Length: 221
Image (cartoon, rainbow, N blue to C red; front, side):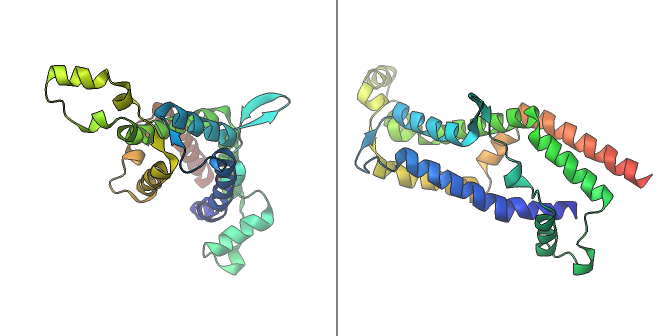
């Protein structure tokens, strides 16, 4: 039953977060002409603004990380029953028993923790770093061309127009869409592989697995 609750993230939480992303992206770049040429730095700044609006909120005049719980787990009993029903659980068994309740509550505590916010920030930073790296040749064609000689490479590097040329937004959008496709459907997936190397995620995963194992062992005794 516990794994059934992933249905919420994959169906309801994903839909809610996607809508939030759409609104923020439209607000940040919706007013920019498709013909507008952007350099690598300006494009990176736009991504940074989008990230800041999505990942943080204001509370009592302070910037704090957005709580992701509503996107990952249902909060209301009726929503929990609906998740179980949608996950194929028998109508007569749509009950959150004490063991499942304990696991769900502990999961919510993990999501609400400062450690979770730290891990989320680290994984997003890793993902966007790879994303920016994938787009760099668009702004710097030199990266795609092996130097003909040492002197030739130096001459090309010294040419600022080659190092950071400006690219129309209309040209960038299909490239962004391609990276999004790779993030979701890529096999093998370099983005997922890079996440597996994030130390904060590795440490947090070990804590979560250990805690859940102790709970399950305790409940079986």
